[in-house]
Length: 82
Length: 243
Image (cartoon, each protein chain N blue to C red):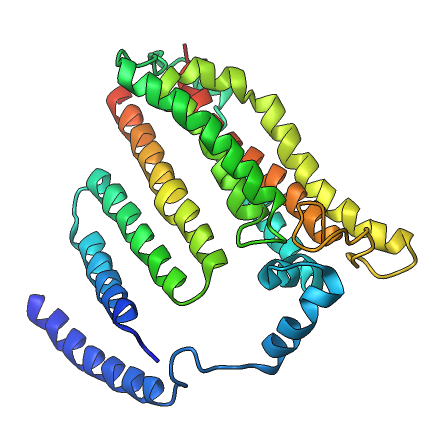
């Protein structure tokens, strides 16, 4: 049985994934990927997988964007040094 | 060139859509799958292990060996990142960067004061209640590790390194990973199998329950929290040390 909420979240996940791909600037992309992580976690949650949803929230919307941002900062610093 | 790409993409996309369509048609309706293994564990886990979160019971008891593999994957990747980011002594003559100073904004610092204790409590709660409710060592560990991250954002790099010094996080990561294997050995010492649940099962629904599951969660929580703090430190440290 698929409820309205599940369909809505499937659509949001599809839209979120597309938004991440279409974002060209890596810094902005770190933010869209974080929002995408939250939507994905909600999808897992409404499909009765709260354990997976918790992992998704902490990894997808905190750890992954953070690592991307820190790496970008490091690359930028190295470029500035020449 | 663009035409060639389109000529490759269109047949590929049509074929993919056709194959996925065929595959999806054969799927069971959403939520209707009842595998024998799941039914069995749902039936026995609460009674056998006093763990009300069956997912945790699977991860840290019935399939605890798989989780040990996962834990060591994380351990290996943290070590790999730290090794890659470790500064080469030969190229140490770069211009120093300013370490990230504490922000001027009172609002940001106040937010940190409010967020850090809440994050620490929530992380500890998640780690210690993995066997009772959704959550556990992996999830709680990352939540706990985001406390020093908030400190980094609100109080600067130096304070970060003071509350999560690399020597400390390395020790925590190693102790957490080794703890998992050592807790597994308790089963062998009790003349049973490796990672068998031999600790007292406690009272169902309480923090101290489910025996090994709870202790393994704590060990994983320490390893994950320390591992993430160490990852952050290897980025932060580079900025401060080059001074």
